[in-house]
Amino acid sequence: MKFSKNISCNDCSIKCDVFSVLSKLENGMSIINPLHVFYKKHEYICKQDSKVTHAIYLVKGSAKLYIEGLSHRNICLNILKPKSYIGLLSFFESLKYAYSVKAIEDTHVCMIDINIIKKLYLQNHDFLLKLNGEFGKSVATIMQKIVTLNQKNIRGRLADSLLYLSRLYDSEDFQMLLTRKDLGELAAISEENAVRLLSEFKQEGIISVEGRNISIKDKKLLQKISEVG
Amino acid sequence: MKFSKNISCNDCSIKCDVFSVLSKLENGMSIINPLHVFYKKHEYICKQDSKVTHAIYLVKGSAKLYIEGLSHRNICLNILKPKSYIGLLSFFESLKYAYSVKAIEDTHVCMIDINIIKKLYLQNHDFLLKLNGEFGKSVATIMQKIVTLNQKNIRGRLADSLLYLSRLYDSEDFQMLLTRKDLGELAAISEENAVRLLSEFKQEGIISVEGRNISIKDKKLLQKISEVG
DNA sequence: CGCGAGCTTGACGTTGTTCAACTAGAGTGG
DNA sequence: CCACTCTAGTTGAACAACGTCAAGCTCGCG
Figure 1: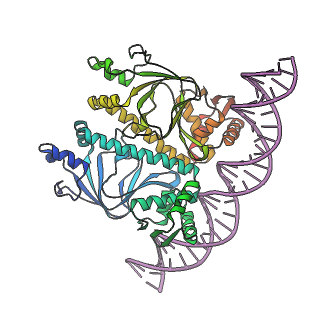
Figure 2: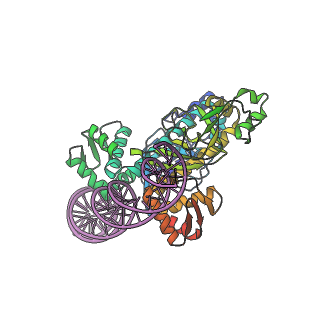
């Protein structure tokens, strides 16, 4: 982990919501000094139960957002790509993170003091509504996850996860950055079953697998499996 | 279901957050006209996937908040008592309810047009922060539920639910309004297992059960079961 | 060359859902 | 007042689903 205070928002490759808000204000840029942090693969970006001090925005790389469960079993809720908020779900008035985030490749994030964010969203209602909207979506996702966890079998759960990844990478043909264990955590199944089911799906001609390259051959069928699971 | 438009906030037995906000404004009371609705036991208060049009506040009675899962299996997230928001989780910019709420006894709620709420929270930041804070707590609860569902055995899950009810009714000795089926949905286990485990816990001297009256005899042990589950 | 991380497969045992049958009490109508 | 039916609760047994353990494999790297 390395950090830098010498990247100004004007130089940043991403024009985030915060930037949009600031650019509307006179001398807006001067009131924040974003902290840019560079994480290596496998490093924690934030840790469950630790204090929320900054808003964190993912600029480059990717990360997994997961709950640290009992006896070292994790449940992965999301894979994060650039232009997404990392801190979002623990944003509003909750003091501690309800989850952990770890880099799954070398990753670059931007951190802004939470108090500045609060000032901004109280001043700027569009920003506030935007954050709240994102928040609402996350909640819907989580609700879905609860049902899936409790009521779908492991085939359905893995099918779900593969479709999720396909949506994330916006292609039927993608290289995932996840290990089999990671994939298991995403589908909330054991690593062994993740492996087994990938083979099964491959055997059945639904997907093709080569290492971490996945290609969805029969999307309809995969959706069917996800539904009936 | 019956409703009335003739209850003013000044007459209402509960002084809710909205009331506090309004009372600070000049002629505040005139800008809303709350709709009071009276539901019979078993009636829907709101239905999953239907449009969110009002903020709903529970004035009297109780209700269960649950996700309608696959093939008619529900998962109950919360039991609601007076002075709680019903619409909260779907409040911010999400158009549709991500869950259903049903009365578990005759229940009286107050409904306020969502657009008025939005105006209020943009004007009044204390109100906004309060709502966001509540929202944050709900998220933490849900995260916990996810871990529980995926990683605790049914004994641990039921123990959790009994402890939850004990906290809710603020007593080790309570009459729940839930059927065995409801209790099962709260713990996310089958009705049969809910029955079986209640008997087991009774046999083991951890609780005593008579119909819907539950008395927790050995709280320590119940907590232990919930942890190791 | 050896070591470790990631991956793969088989066998096994536990866990929890489901089905089915039965009881008890409450409400209804002949 | 008795048969009925409906709901809620209860119990047992069978089956399927999953996680876990164990063993072995491959590949990349020091």
